[in-house]
Length: 340
Image (tube, rainbow, N blue to C red; front, top):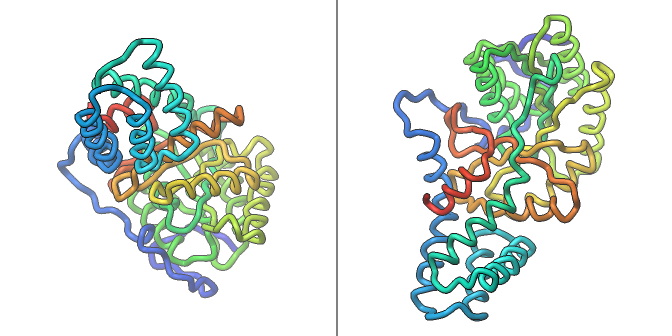
């Protein structure tokens, strides 16, 4: 029933084509800018919105007044920060201006940066994969979010840390998804457990059992992409989690939801739906190198703070290279937004 996939193996029952965003496996590169430079380049859309208009705003206003705050609110909304997070930041900024008697644009910029850092800091929580062996990571997300590509990058990352990795091709609905995962597996010399037209939960169950028997450090389990409104498919992903627990009662040890940063505030609905279905424990924010403004991360932080349950952002991606997926660091992220 199950086996190790090789590039070129297909399932006769899977006919849905892959999406362009997940179909391409990035080429290897030799000379590239450092992570900080790539992060700044990836967040250039948000930085342009925050920096240039704010600078213009203060050149047009001689003093800090309510009109200035109204225009600043528009700038934050344009940066995709969202209504809730923008209101929170502006209220805190007003209090900071009054408390510290701020008068010029440079002071307000620094105050805004500090407040944003305070808001995002709770999202920073590096993933520790040493808590169990095998450490089972279940990945979910809608089609096109970059889920399968993220799995390949994580496999490479954990290998670089000296860990053994096994991939579970649980997206049995799309032949292209298994093809792509097989390519990543071949490149990283990582075995891929998959089945042709089989139940995805059974595929992942087999992978977890195989990893336990062979002493594998990390299992990365792919699942079929789905929309939160597809209730019957959301039930299937619930089943995957239940079956994983049959293979290992302590698993999955991490449930990562992969979000395309280009979806903006729609990411909130995805987080809510997937969390209710499979209890999301971490987020991966991808494609920050495109047209995404990245401001939704502030809304995620604010919503989490209000609910008393912050879901950490484990990784962010700013490109197609294998090293373009890095742990989220709040200060590094905010510095890149403001060009520092």
